[in-house]
Length: 326
Image: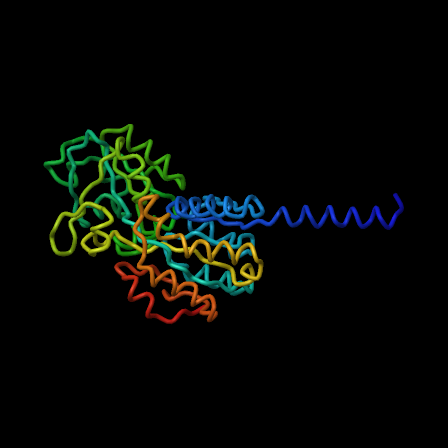
């Protein structure tokens, strides 16, 4: 074989390999992971292996760190991008689309043996606020009727968007929490912890509760109207599960959308999100929200509608009417 033919063959082999290695890189929230993973599986089947989609779980904060360094195409997020993350992305020249993809009922769980069936936000605050650290250690310190079992707390780590949202909704300030609890970015670790200790309580996304409801008991939360409400698709839709229902998102790097495989994946996500969201036990958005996401991409509506802060209690209709800003 002469050198010209050999070079041509080598180039063809290299081009073929490069084509076979089309990858969509995603990282971030463990809460959003079940939806994105379901979409990724179906998308990869639809491309017959031509595109590989990797989905990591480093928490919303960890995901944004990678995203704002340009290491990922898409970031899963269980809360909006924060001011510091917006600044980091801006410094790196990374522009992005903020796409809400579902609603989640942030779920408070106890051990099945626990007598606790409902809690107020004030009681949750008494357990989780920074001032409780090292002081509130038994259930009867929350309410005398709860008994004297040791209070064992399990929750997401500080890189988690669920941690940010919960602390904002319950303690009144994002990231304000006692530190003496068992923390993990892996929700399965939290499930195991609560399921093994009769005095345990924890919180995470609804999908992880639903997947493990034989090991856990969901706690009804007393809403602002004084009604104790359990998390469910219906109570999220009707707004009664307040203040712990929230929108969840994916963020897409604008430059990544220039790659055919990323654009195809995002379009596939928006067209299939409703069905797959229901499949993994989250609450799908109205159909018009997914259409609006694609329209925002077409019209280059970059940035966030939140201004760098978590927005407890915002409805999807309200969010859709806001103007995005970088």
